Length: 434
Image (cartoon, rainbow, N blue to C red; front, side, top):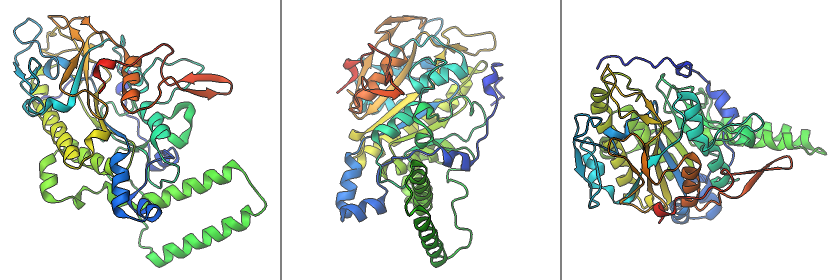
């Protein structure tokens, strides 16, 4: 496939962040890892039941902006429609692109929202809006969805990260990194940009006995130092050290080679498929929020060739992930979100591409708390504007929070200033909620 041109936005510049920086910003309150849960609850069966009941989110981030017309809101037979046809889903009267036959067949757990109007078509600022659910303002550094869910759905006694982000492509990597904002570094993301396994967590040849003895010496020295002292800094130090130990002990969660070959074959050999399998492993272990970035959908040229390559992969991996979660009894408590910074223009440009478009585009919600097999909202005949049910980022986020049983009206505080989870007056889209 020919190289797609960049759109010229400065937000395409690559931002590299080392693992240690991510670790310092790692989320602080994830769910139990297997070992911790069994130790506290005394039974692998009880621990497994806890993991099944806990809510979590996997976000499929379609970086660069996937086309709604080639995925979830096709317009065949009109001047803006492009060459692909639509196909009937398992819900009568609901059609999606012919490039997505597997999702069409298993549409029962998914709701499409076809009426997003987010009014921003710049990569960087639009990505920040769609990860934070609101416009920024100079006086408030808002956290993104992953950080909020790390705080709301994590557990204090966890030793594993509760916000993990896979983004190994170079295009668009710096546009929407995990961001804890005013919640602080405790709820930041572990960003995996060069490998599917966190770097610098192996013991480097130190034996188990040496590792235990060093940990014991560290604990003894810390205990002597802390005698007669008390501070939040000391507590933070202990928490950070405990999390490093926890990640070292749970490195296997990131290793998909531990999955049976038949499971790996189901997801396929693509990087996106392998990362989604890793996301399922992390979610099953109790990590509340995992984002998997699939780049690069910024098809200013050769839109149809690019989507003909990428959409079938999305179709296969998304359907496999939903099937896998359902088979494991996890889907009813796992919310799967497909989202990007915006969609693509109905008009086709002279290079047979579609440009940035935020006025009438689509997202999907599947699983936890969602009325599956449904569609909310409608774009007009040519896809140029929202014809019915228009919503913005704030209502989408309120809907996500409600699906997860989180009160989106609750306030955080910056000093004495209350900061609600969503903009004041925002209500969820109740029609999509189970």
